[in-house]
Image 1 (cartoon, one colour):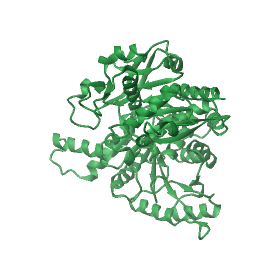
Image 2: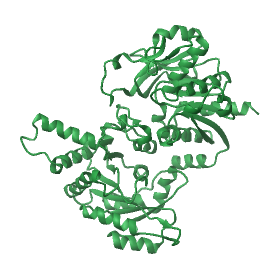
Image 3: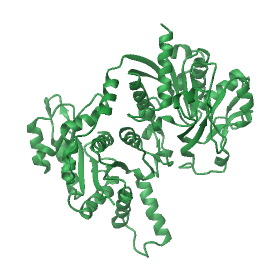
Image 4: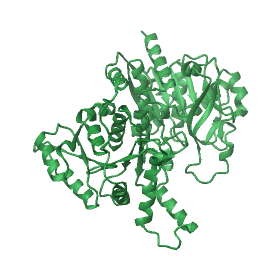
Length: 539
């Protein structure tokens, strides 16, 4: 059994400083040194998970193999580390309180008054250590959401204080990420926000071991010395995190600053192997030195907040690096697309991806975009709802079922080519009840998707309630749409494509959840190649 060590990442001054990227970058460096590492996210909101949150509120809802709907930071963890996360990697206050209340209802506390301390903090400590007790990991990194000083974060900080004491010396490290702002009028960096943030953390009984300072300008040795003095850390424990061109630069920047060495030293772990970052640097080199560009339209209804499609954007980066291509995304709001303006809105694009989503808003715009690319032989990739819209568009405009629709949009449609899954029909609660997680799919060998995957059986992650209605299978396939992927257990249609089209593929699952830096998703790679071929055909 491994003596698992723990690293806690807290944040101060302001949110959105990039705790998830710092945690993932540190984990990447430790992994490259030969340590087995995982990362978990503790979210202070009271929702059980982000599954019922509007993407405008929380960005993308990421899904793991075991069907957990989680924070989008878990996507960063997987993309950096190239290993899957699970239900245990994301914990919310809602889940903590639900568990404690369930225990109270069962009588587990033997009549004691249930309180934040010790009962809530004990549950938090238990959740933090679940991954550590599996024996799989040398180091567990725990990112605590929110900002120190937030009321909702206090139980988590208290749990860290208790756990540090329980784990003993050299078994845990607290990294505090703060902002060192530059005041243009004064022409200088200001350390006071960081000092106040550390003071607030220390008032909760936790002293940071390492300071990571987000900054627009390099920190001088004088500033590092001042921060060390006022924040009670060694000068070498003050780490500069300067703004980077891309999140994928951050591991290398942290390596240059020595973050991994500082952490290993404090955990009394050997630093005797140089991290092997060859593959990472090869990816960075290709990503930053593209030989060509493709223009891709992303049609969705949450395009004002690009984090709603975070995994798709990152998948384009991974796939683009394979061919040393810069993927230039054009954000197209589906509500603004009509039959009259589709041609002008989609002009000059080398490919179109119609994104996932829920609900009726913007649906007709997605259908018009699909009709345009189908008729003009422009590469098309439809994901989840995007695949369903492709089926509806084909049923209406090719099969001749002019009123075809999904029962999600129109419960009384005479031609429900997309309908509610049988097992979903009696479900009342919305949260955590969709078809979630990894499911198998069998591919047809003579198909575009088989050419991409080079294997007959695949496993992909899902998040949906509605499906292709098999009652219309014969009509739709007779008209020329090919079903090239089916779930072998349920017979559900997973993938459709048009053999008469250069590259027209729709998938019911979410391939973007499985794309990583070192393993770009084969469908994104194939789509990018199709877009490049289309571009070259125009010249």
